[in-house]
Image (cartoon, rainbow, N blue to C red):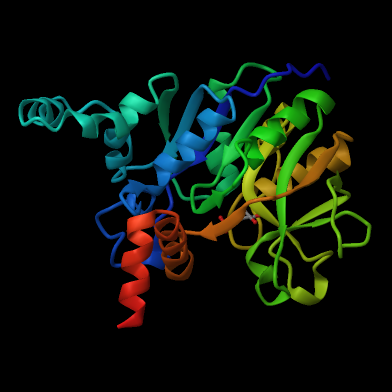
Length: 296
Ligand code: G1P
């Protein structure tokens, strides 16, 4: 199959209920919770922009309109800030920073899983167009100016092989994730071909300690397979099942791309708090404040 060589669209599912962060997420979408003073979702869209993406497709649902509003213009606020001499703040607004990226949203009518969410974007893609998927719970901090996603897109463009970001995980937590089998030595993992990918295995059945992180660069065959897969035993359509089908039935190659980022699962209290502390420690004055606070 002919694959076009540029990944320009990122699908970002934001329809989740945010149950792990209740009551904070009762009225506020979890994606809008801030790391310091910027919502998590803005970091994710900025990461996409840095990776060369120019179109974001939010898969959303009723009640999460505040996410769209965050990326839209707010004329009243803009006018107010200009009139009160606080124009400087506008430079950090998403609509200023992200004017080169277009954002659309599609509603997912039923919560039928990640695979079902991603499938909603099929009508936006051209035939055979590869795409990125970014799961906004996962906040990635990378010291290099080329983050994981950017490098994954570069690799895809060179090799035409799907790229799935992975990271080592403690075996006690493995059953919360997709896990890859590279048929190899996992002590020093390298970017290698994936033979198998399984969703949330019990630790005793897990093919490795490499878990799928929420960044994917995928060929169009996965989108086609999302239409063919069945629900799993939890009643959801899994993205993992469609990738497995592309590996086994279409003979498409996928690479387990080893992450070089610090990863925070901001869908949990622990990850959210760690991300905030880590980012605060990067800022001189906030670092001082944190160190003074913990000393007390
Ligand atoms: C999803 C994927 C899983 C992946 C995880 C990463 O699971 O299905 O394969 O490892 O995201 O965050 P979820 O967290 O939506 O249950």
